[in-house]
Structures are given as structure tokens and as C-alpha cells.
Image 1 (cartoon, one colour):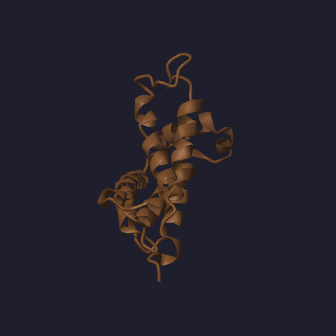
Image 2 (spheres, rainbow, N blue to C red; image 1 turned 90 degrees about the vertical axis):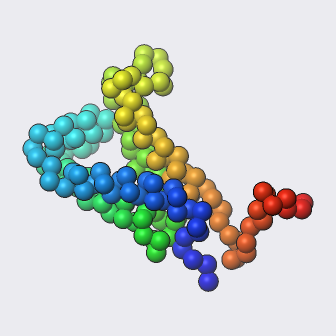
Length: 152
């Protein structure tokens, strides 16, 4: 029986999961001002979010981050499931970065000073895609290690 998580997936899962879980825990008790700032930035990039009030939105973001961070950290959650959530989460930040005025330099993908913090979150999108695209072991067979000089 193939385990739900291969050992080489755990470093990316732990790094991203701990970061996202911490962020979600920090947002748990968000006050009105914090919730409005979080909601305002997100709704600016994704206008459909204007239908949600700021405080419930902050609670939803917090709960989502706690759930995703926990899923990434728990090895009983299959990597493909956790990676799908991580990729979606990273894509949302990438969209926020690309859609929010002032995040990028004119006519460039390079970040401004204000956009640097969100631009850095692209690593979560990359980590999620890497985990999703890893073929894993087929039918429980071990993959050859190229560093051992496997014969072709």
C-alpha cells in the first residue's frame, strides 16, 4: 500500500503549511480595522468579494488558512489534495499581485516596494505546482535515483 505522502514532499509541505497556519492563526481575532484592510485589498483585485462584509471575510480567510496549513502539515492528507489547495491559494496571491495597482513597476512584472511582500508569495504557487506535477511512484514501484548513477 502506497503511503499518502512521500518523504521528499514533506519539506515543501512543512515550510508552506507552517507559514500558512501561522498566518491563519494571526488573523483569528482580527479587529474591524484589520478586517477592512484585508477585505479592501482582496476586493480590489476580486470585486465579487464586495458581497461579503469585512469581518466575516477575515474570519473566512483565517479559517481557510488554518485548514490549508493543517492539511499541508498532516501527513495523512494525500499530497495531491494538499497541493491542490496550496496551488489555488498561491494563485490567488499571484492574481492579487497582478491585479492590484501599485504592486508592480510600470510596464513590468517586477515589484514595487509595496508589492514585494505579495510578490514573494509566488513561492507558494510554485511549491504547490511542483507537488501536483510530481508523478510519484507508479504502482508502488520505487523510482530510480539519478544521483546513484542509474543505468539507462
